[in-house]
Image 1 (cartoon, rainbow, N blue to C red):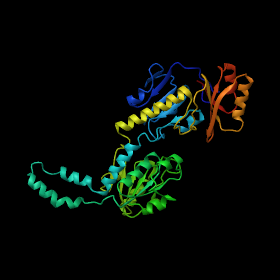
Image 2 (image 1 turned 30 degrees about the horizontal axis):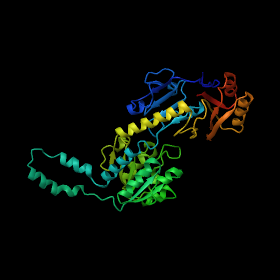
Image 3 (image 1 turned 90 degrees about the horizontal axis):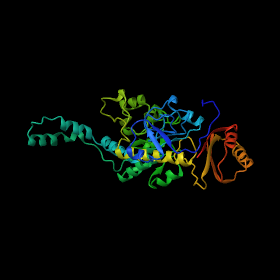
Image 4 (image 1 turned 180 degrees about the vertical axis):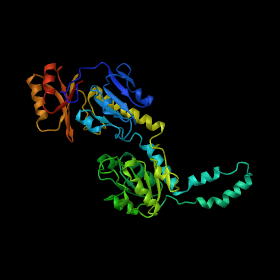
Length: 403
């Protein structure tokens, strides 16, 4: 079908086909039973795509694709608007790499508070033929050059209190720091994870003005792109440290350079190197290694695989960035799932057609988010092709699956 054609439905499938991009952890791939799944990078007509950082193009999403899973938190490498238009849920794995990022933020704060890198570089630069006694004396004389400050008693500001941010907030408390946090979209689940000792701030400006360290944990949205700009940096506590282990686009690099030059910002630590920051002693840059641990990659792959299985086998949706969270325990062997525009009367029209065909609805669940509504309907008998064609012919129905 072309993307403007009428939607189609899938019959019962004995075998699902998953196309992978990038190298996916074997622990994740092993979640797909060989008796029911064909998985690989050269799969034709896949039912689903599984990827990590691959920049997915529209041409790489064939008409057979019903779901896409990203083994990671960010989905800026997936054409989300196109997927929503075609009724394709896009899954991510929030929290699967949270501990890995938290531990790197811990290292970043320690590196920023004490000149550990400078001290290591100095020690490594010495002549290995030097006598041990002379080296010991040299180190004692020069160690004051690399003195720093302790984290205990300082204030940590955490912007974004989701899976990673809440762990970083707890980390600050464990270091003996005062912790303040800001998140305008804090969910109930995230609020339960947040330690009660974290003081919630009303806005970012108040947070940065009192923080010695500011750690960012935000997705890239129109509202967050360039959030830390020149105007925002003027509100920072003079000489404070900014840590960016979220996304490069959240920070204006040019504004950071200016803030470092005039002393408003004391140090910048980021997982996103930029040419204009190279060679600066006040900028510690890492090659996007926040989630680069074996454990994080395994956790992300396993979570993504489980979410694809739940959707392909039962139509259930967990951790989708463009579809509602919806799960219904199966009550019959016959299930249809329908994605449609979120408009009044759609569910009523669908149920009317089912009733007119003489079928009984055993159970159903309907949820919506934004412009998309999603329905899971369990039937007592197998729906016939004519009924399915009537449903997919309804104005506003985007796609449909028979599972």
